[in-house]
Image 1 (spheres, helix red, strand yellow):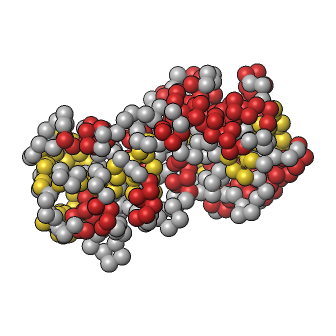
Image 2 (cartoon, rainbow, N blue to C red; image 1 turned 60 degrees about the vertical axis):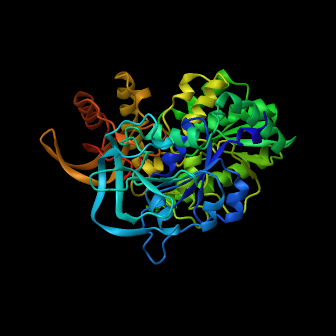
Image 3 (cartoon, one colour; image 1 turned 90 degrees about the horizontal axis):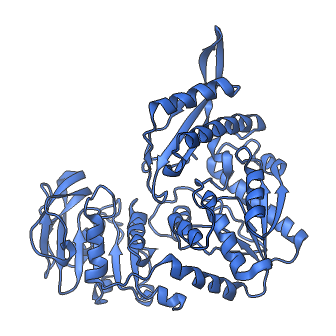
Length: 518
């Protein structure tokens, strides 16, 4: 089986700007079908060349009735391959194919009860009266020719539609979110009963093909890899080492923005477990110098990203003639950082992997995980026999503690945050919760509050605690930690961390918030 064979059974997702588009891709991948997200502005020629088994039109925040509404080429519906429109995608199908969409007098947002009206392969084994998640302001008042309604809710007479002859389907609700109880069944029906996809997107099949792809791309060239000790860079280093051996050289850059004991732990872990070339560079003064006076989060990220590359280029020149810079860039990083060259998805934040690189740099990029989600990378690592201590490590941002210090980054503020963060990790691990949380960490806020210690007035810093549960980082819920544990956090931090007199807990989900505060 070649890499191309792995991608023969693939789904194309056209993005119209929905916050849930990545969820669609994640659900499809979970069902072992390869898919890619592309902007709805993708040319018709490229859509044809993609050779998809099926196309999914995502939701979106706008209305098809707006003057500058995002549309797609009408020829798309003549490709004779299955198409599924979700929310905005369903209204788009109706609008383009001659039906009618009107503003609704009652906007439907949140949970609704789905009543099945007609038999459809899309709803095989789906429970009648199941819960679905609605998020729309328009409604369909007239169906295009050849279409029929197959389900409804209390506020949507046409909650699902289909033209089985043309193999075009539409859902007014979002099957990709957890709130839709039978959403996975519905998407699987589209993938397997309608598109006739095969389940061939498997990590065990992927390892050897990725190794071969790396060999084909790199040849006899040398690769330098930024090893942070996180899941992504660690698995990338092991994978690339399997492909090219000693032509890989790993650099651990101490940017001065690491958690307590991070450098020593990474160095000992890789020296004990892997025979990989590793050089440890202390560039903390350089990074902190470049951050002086910067308070804007995007400027922080870009400054750190540019300094990161600058250091890499300096060190690689010293070490030898390297052609490639390897990074553990993930698919969500790419989607969140880049608006698909004019596509509709808003840029949420730049990741230093993809958003902070200078336009001109000497090294070529090698990003073997650019198409993968984090949990897929974890599975890949397990397939290669990597230890759980590395595979289960909570994500740590490339810009490090700089984006967990709101405002200017100074040595004094770093010392406070490191001490508080160390306490949080200790207590989380003692409570046996580390592996069940996606991330848990401290944030230093740019405010001071009044307190009382030993009968004396204090005016000191505030630490916020962030702990979330998630499967892939695209969406997240705040973790309902025991009150006793929260009490331990507060008591230890206030008593042990000089300069802090107040601790708060973040109970925001993603969306609307992001996991990191900056």
